[in-house]
Amino acid sequence: MTIKGRWTEKDLKKLKKKQSKALRKNSRTRRKISTETGNAIVPNAMGVFAGRRKDIQDSRTDKRHPDGLYLRSRWEANYARYLMWLESRGEIQRWEYEPDTFWFEKIKRGVRSYLPDFKIWKTADSEPYYVEVKGNMDSKSATKLKRMAKYYPDVSLELCDAHVYNTIRTNFKKIIPNWE
Image (tube, rainbow, N blue to C red; front, top):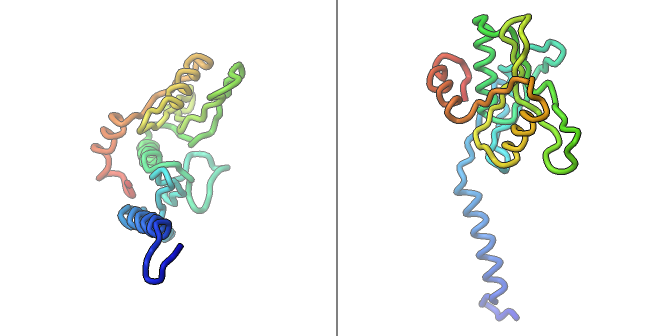
């Protein structure tokens, strides 16, 4: 029941909810990453900066995209730039972003596949190895890595965790262009 000039309890709750939603929206500082195309990469609901980076292309000529490579996070984008830098110096032969999916055939529920971030070749005749860039190791990611070791023991997989990434960032942030 609304009385003229007065608010009911229901109206006050609605107003309070609307105000707190607006306050949350305005208080979040949404940092944007601008790209060379003029489009900004904004964080998704999880706060991850996923999007195409025009300055990044992997070594596959058949997968070139005019707007650049789509990467799922800033860490992956920066690691890709680091790989491009290593490739230009001849320290690695080539690299690819998410080329292979490994399936765990015997698993019925839960994590049934794994898609490593990067596939890297040191030399033209060497076996490739995989790198997973992981800032936060949750239980699902840990399960993927454990199953990968169990079902594919011959595949070499390295983890680029926060410690490794921060070491690379400290040493190469000023050297490699477009570091985010």
